[in-house]
Length: 556
Image 1: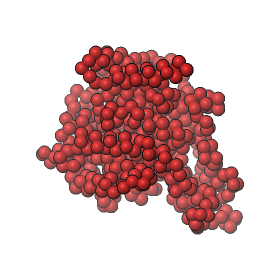
Image 2: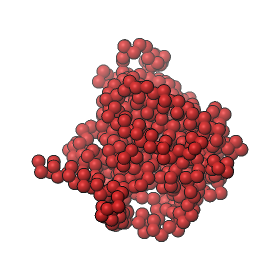
Image 3: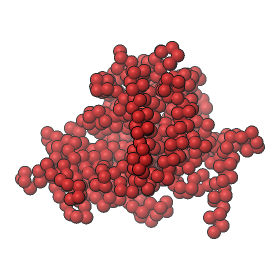
Image 4: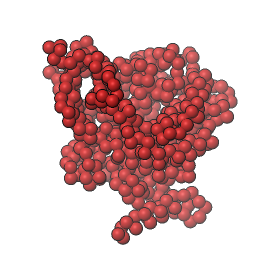
């Protein structure tokens, strides 16, 4: 009983000290900002890392219950005749082990569970949490919801904060993806309205705050600071060591505009779910698409760039941000085709580990954080964009290489990392803001290990991209999209939270043999690439598209 009263009291005290005031609380906040920053970055990222061994992948039920997780994690098994594929099984299990390790139970900081991106980053980060929730979604949607909701609960007024950690709070926001993440968690679920209704008003208020504080007079959006974008040492913003920083307040940013469109789409979807008018958000998304298409498209380069409205000048830096408007449905069909060609070009983004943060042929490409290495969160967004425009085969091929590379590295090192070398399966040539001595002291000179914040999206790609598992109006479906590179392999997936087991054999000529095991029994079917299959029988929904698939016995 005493603890039940103490924790909320401590939480209120910590919240009060985080507020930016001119009182003694401000002095205490500044002191603690330095103290906790050093503790978090130096102690956790350097001292603990040297002593910490690999995280065990076994997650027995009694361990899961310690953090309120009642369902076992998904399990993957990949088999092949002559192929070395054991790294897929290991990596898939490793993601969920690290995801669970970084899950935090309610404490002084948060009244709900939340996720650390990595041991070195011991706060609640906005866009990290949006992606962490997507890694949790196929395992436990209640946890996924809490991870996203923690960001909302720790807002500063109407602003969702970049990061909140103990007595430290950021003055900035970050890519506004929480609404998008929540919609992705609950889409197709019958309980979606009751799950999003409590947070809808807060997200609407955040939307108004963004319009009032991050929108240029021409209707496009800007970052208040490179750190707000999450890609701070990108060549579009700064030098590698960050000694030179561009004033981003003068630039219309294609990535923030894309995020705002996704944000509007998500609010429109939530509004429909809870019976409210969605037309304003739909109209706003359409208008912003048109503005970005007209103002930020560079016809000669076939990409979207940052642009200074005052001078009309483009920042012609071929970064992953140039591709993110695909995710939001901005380009017209011809523009999307040209962007796809750039993605697949040898001097574009078609690296052995694809979708680097800067195009391989760009003069600023370097193996230094956001100046060239691969980050799974932005890569994921580009893959979603390719799918949105019907380039599903291209998305599957790129996703397969991404997952294979991450799993191979995990098999060798037993760790996941913050960012990856697009050309090599090691970290020898990677840097962290080379020349920045403070970053070298606090976070080291290499990517942080045990980073699951968005690297865990490889598992989400397996489940949602390759198996194509999704919900629609309360019914469950598959839409397998295994690429040609997977031909000859077998993929077995168990989703305990769905009481579902799936087996897919990737045969020749894009033919897939699919086995679906539910409580109702087992059935086997053949299907082609991207062909929808209804998992359950729902007569009330009428004849499903699965009826066009020939049963296995009919083809034998």
